[in-house]
Amino acid sequence: DQQVKQNSPSLSVQEGRISILNCDYTNSMFDYFLWYKKYPAEGPTFLISISSIKDKNEDGRFTVFLNKSAKHLSLHIVPSQPGDSAVYFCAASNGGATNKLIFGTGTLLAVQP
Amino acid sequence: SAVISQKPSRDICQRGTSLTIQCQVDSQVTMMFWYRQQPGQSLTLIATANQGSEATYESGFVIDKFPISRPNLTFSTLTVSNMSPEDSSIYLCSVDLQGAEAFFGQGTRLTVV
Image (cartoon, rainbow over all chains, first blue to last red; front, side, top):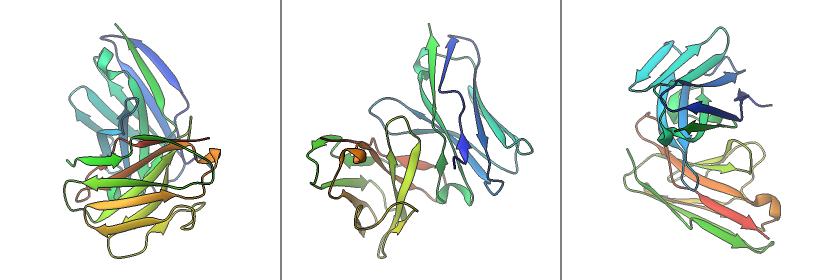
């Protein structure tokens, strides 16, 4: 049973445009959500997180939106840059980042120059 | 943040043998986590390693197959025992820092032939 789902395995956008990566979850007990970026041959790198008491968190070009009623979160990257090309994982936990993280299967983002 | 070093970065092993993966952190941490990413799959937590106590394994993972050591607050090892081709994966260690986001090592790419 996949508790965290990223239904788009890949996404291609033009440089300068907005990238929107989506993530759905099924467990209503999740209270903390994170996005990670992963380049080949490297470990995942933390990007941004959001607590379930918020519906938006912004950090520079990255914004995460959380819709609890729909059990849906999204990561917006604007403007997209070629260096953003990577696999993006969403993750969720109940109990904050110190607790077990459940990851989605990832979305490969390709930003075209 | 934390600097996490994993060794080896990659290895090709014969079936039936064992491989021990090392994870070194540049600061003392309470909890260390071991994840597996099978080809095309999401990251799956294998176990949580706390210093001074036995590791806690997730459903589907057992100590005989994945023994873990945690001799101090900066180091842990994961052994993949009696390997088969199905164990070919990327193995990652991660740590959390005071409830902040989890940081990952660069991973160990294991191929079993």
